Amino acid sequence: MLEELTGEERKMNKYRLQVTVFVLVAFMLGCNEFMVVGVLSDIARQFSVSIATVGYLVTVFATVYAVSTPFITVYTSQYNRFKTLMVLMAVFLIGNTFSGFAPNYLSLIVSRVITASVSGAIISLIMTFASTIAPRNKRAGLVSWIYSGFSIASVIGVPIGTTISTSYGWRYTFIIISVVSIITYALLFWLLPHTVPQVKSTMIKQLTLMKDSRIYVSVVLVLLSAATLYSYYTYIRPLLTDSLGFGIHNLNWLLFLIGIMNIVGNQLSGRLADHQGLKAIPLIYISVAILLFVFPFTLTLKWLGLIILMVLSTMNTLLSAPLQIHFLSVAERDYPQSLVLASSLSSIFFNFGISLGSATASASVDFTGVGKLAYISAMYALGTLAFALLLNLVIKRHMARGTSHE
Image (tube, rainbow, N blue to C red):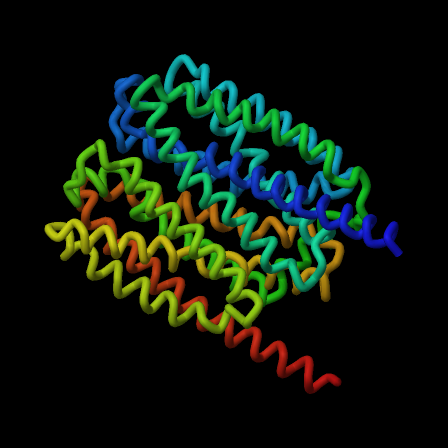
């Protein structure tokens, strides 16, 4: 009995370590993707290009991430998942290290393309391992923690990266990420099962998932929600300093606060996922649209404007876990051959949304000014609301058809 209990305790301790390393992977990827937002001005200054031009680094990364992820995910699904993850992590390490030593702006773009091309496949494999390892009743909580890893990158990684950039140079931010990547690689090799059950199938069979209305409506919802966020978040640094009037010395703790609210939102999203959270999304985006339309009127009331940004940071992350669980549940039940692809859909289309939102912002900022980007974001929020209502209608109709067949 004692040996059995000890074995169970060992299993739980290993599970906790696995959860920790999953979050660490998300943190690593989040730092690599988001830290650029905090160092835009420093990169622009060193390479003598405009901040709007450097802003396209966000767009390029997100576009490559979104386009490459489904191809890499589907193609590598026929190979051992553990070995595939190890190879992709090595490519990520090479690309990120190249970013730290890029001699010019073009080289920096190339390095970002390398890391972006594998980042989505890495997180989709992590989600698949999480789905395999976690007990069903803990899956929503684990997914919310993995998403929280990206928010922790905003809370800790982006402010620290900004501090390092302003004190020593932006290149050191990428070098530190490479060190974290090496540690993460070793932990994954130690903790993950080297073989897991997987259904192998052709690319065509895997893509049948995308014919399901519960899926293709959901991916548009993910895309628009990301565009809502990144229509203003791409320029969060000048938004806080130039528009709201906070000093540059306040930037770190402001980004820290916004990141904390992201973590709160991700944890709440896990609870929403356990309580049919998709039904709450329309109300959430009605509130988001209202706050975005109000925000430009608060630019002279910087503390009120900051509070609105913090609330938006919480609300814009609430649908992450419910939608991820939705994708996994549909795939497990009806498309088991497409599980890895399903696990990647949120990250793929979120990055399409980042690309759309950041490109819209970069194209508009010279005409509207940073402070009025919220109006563009509000229009995307209304689109998100429309597709959230449509998704709930599609799910309701599908359930009704399923009941009628029984």
